[in-house]
Length: 367
Image (tube, rainbow, N blue to C red; front, side, top):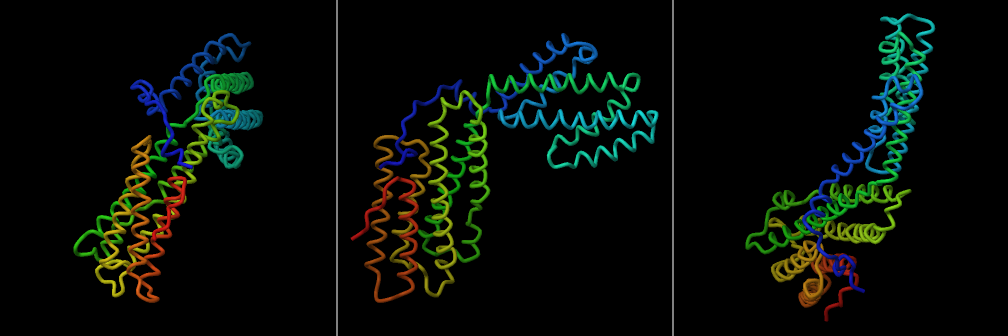
């Protein structure tokens, strides 16, 4: 069955859609602005003393505005809990000490310890911040200020979560960019290997090493982006409109993980055993050209991120034919039981495995 990554048809997005999708911070900024305005308006109609400090409403709204609905809920809860801890700490210290150096030392020291609690996460810094605000700014009415600070911020956070639920973020574009970046890295590595194999004078071992690409960061980025997309879909009413997109990204990542293993294996074999100083080269002059052709064909398939129709079929056929030709060349070059044949065979098997994952069907064996 043909790979969805190679044959899936999608109408090209317009300029406005492309511009919007490639700037994920824009919808986040719009949601933050909407949430802040709503929180400000609501805070002014809250009972006293909450309405005396309406500007803490937008603060809570912005805190709760994150890239996913789940993270908005989590950050809102953590921040309100941290502010509550700071308010409690400041209130207790205010009962014992007047605002001053001793009180500040105690709330900062104790607040820093409380902020280290792992359940508060990055929101732990609000423990010290809120305790200092209440102790110093609200010293004329610490209880009222503490209630207003905590209550108005909590209301703002609820508004932020509500806006996130109504206009839920779904960062699929970032996942697509990371997958495309991974494909490009893998393709460039294969193309670089092919270029080196076609040289009249093979690269030295040190030059081959310098040609090795660092693939793991791109792979990790693609995995993290997919995880964010999946997390964003939780509790997200709009996710049902993008299920196919999420599934496509998941399937694409699974294919590219297999291809990444293939690229790593082939790169290791070539770099370590097919250099200018090798006494028993892995491929030798008879197989380098066919190997380079197969690597170039594989790179071309990877570079075509959204091919359709004849373009996809032609790329798949070229890849299949080039690997089959390499297999035939390896068999023809075999004379007895030689390590060179076994090593070249390992390259063929690795390429066949990667091509099967990428194209959705196995490569016919050469004859």
